Structures are given as C-alpha cells and as structure tokens.
Image 1 (cartoon, one colour):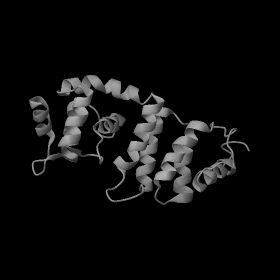
Image 2: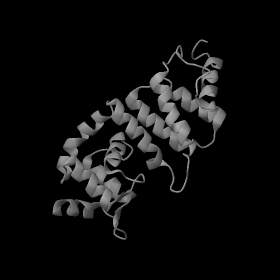
Image 3: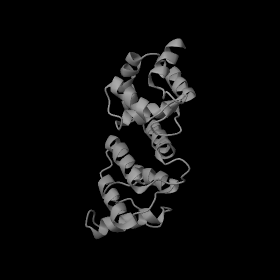
Image 4: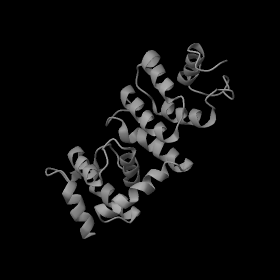
Amino acid sequence: MRRLEELFNRYKDPYSDMILAEGVSVLCSDLQVEPQDIVTLVLSWHMNAATACEFSKEEFFGGLQALGIDSIGKLQEKLAFMRSELKDEQKFYEIYNFAFGWAKEKGQKSFALDTAIGMWQLLFAEREWPLVNHWCDFLQDRHNKTISKDTWAQLLEFARTVNPLLSNYDAEGAWPYLIDEFVEYLYDKSVVDK
C-alpha cells in the first residue's frame, strides 16, 4: 500500500488529491507511451476512471491493485497484456462502451463530433473496421453535430455484424437513422455496390 501511495504522490496534482492531465502526462512519459496511445484508455478502463486525463486516488489504487501492480516497472510489464485485451471481443466491447463516458465532456450527454471521430479512429485502428474513415468523412460532410450514446453503441454493433460490403445489411433493421444515412452515403459515393 505504501508503494502505491508513493506512486500516486509522484503524479498527483499539488493542489488536489487527484492525478490531473499534467500527472497523467508524466505517468505516460515514465511508461514510455504517448498520452493518446490506446493503452492509456485501457488503463483508465481498468481504473474505472470517470474522466479522461484524471485519476482519483480510489481509481488509481483500485485499478493498480486489481492488476497486481505496485511499481512503474510492473505497470510497464502489463502494457502488452493491456493491448492484448483489445483483441478479446468482450473486453473490446466493454472498453468501447466505457470510452463514451470517459472521453465526453463533464456534464454532457453526448460526444462532440471531433472527440467521437478521434475515439473511433483510435478504437477501430485496433479492430480494423474498413469503413471507419468513410464513417468519419460522412459525419463531417453530412452530420456535423454531437454523437449520442445510442449512436455510439449502435455503430459498434453495425461494425460487428454488417460486413464491409453491406451484403448482409437489412434496411428494415432497427438501425438509427444516422447509420441508415451512412449506408446511403456509401452507395452514393460508390464505396459499395447496391
């Protein structure tokens, strides 16, 4: 417990009992990863962090204890394991859904479009969904609004169940309007054939 306390104190903000953006940056530097590396999201998921770039003492202690970590060296050794968790279908689903609450602005019910796009590009770089860039282009061209939690969740379901050629896409299915519009966009742009 003392080692966790020392670790926490190394990164915590001098004016609050939390690790804030500057402390997270130092932590990432100590781990030799960029703050925008997806492993930071996975670590935050393990800590059940409420907000990006912040760890409360409880989140920090709870997450590291659950992982069996009490030093930077042990945390560095766990990074490969954390990356591998993204390959597990169920864990990816949990991390993806966690990311919505974690990355949105405090007090907001939806994602700013640029935040959502950044998160999709980060997450789908791991899952290799071939339509992610088309989806992001579509949103910037046609939507340009915030992204609701429902759209966030439904897009993962769409990416998991509908093949990239859309041959198993059901226009009568219960997809949100935005996803139906995206499919039309793909047809209009001749990305896929009807």
